[in-house]
Figure (cartoon, rainbow, N blue to C red):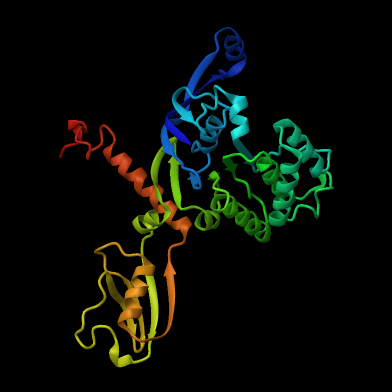
Length: 352
């Protein structure tokens, strides 16, 4: 799946205030343009799960709608499984599956299993393959407990599990998931995560996931794309983003021999590590501000250097990491924008 320079601009009519303004808007409507997505480019290969993250209104859903063929981009291009989705919608529909957390593709007044039968006929799935996939999905998602219940009577977690099965019944190569676990309890969330890991690792499917659940991102995604105000602000492996924006970490250690406290014998500390606090056998290590070091790399160096009776780790959670990434990139963009002081084109009136 490839997106190159995707841009989507919407034109909307704005009503003028007052009765006279309303009448004038009928004859001469005032139209404004709003760019929801601007110059978005990325690619995802087979057997990869990409998390597309961003605040509300950042452009995530608009990007997915262009990749699924629902919307036609104002400029740029996209190819999904070798197909231009907004030009060959029917062919594209056979190549993709999609689950939107607040919507369902199942028939509201029918049992879920009958919806699966209708989807089988729509996509032309052979009966033997249909039965085999339902057995597989039932084993992973425990669908048979409720698939004879009308969809309108299913709980949110049950409905989304059925939606996941329905989206994959025709064996698509690429799956789009827009907030699929919103509102679910922790047990069902973990069940869905296990199902997605199986689809990526065992079936080699490409998955594009949007979510605000950072636990989900941490357990599923190896690569993250951050989007804000319709633009990509960061694209890279999750571990690299943690390393760059993870901030401080602390390792609390209790030494077996207080006399061997760091620095007591003049021995150097492990590279990248400094002592933040020390009280008898209890020592708190942190980053020394030099080379970037993950908490796990620091832990390995500390364990190799000292004899330890007990330890505990503290590091920023993924939500803090993503917030720091947004804020830092927005600050960098503001500093390098035309007219800013760092850009070198600031007005002379700013000079002291």
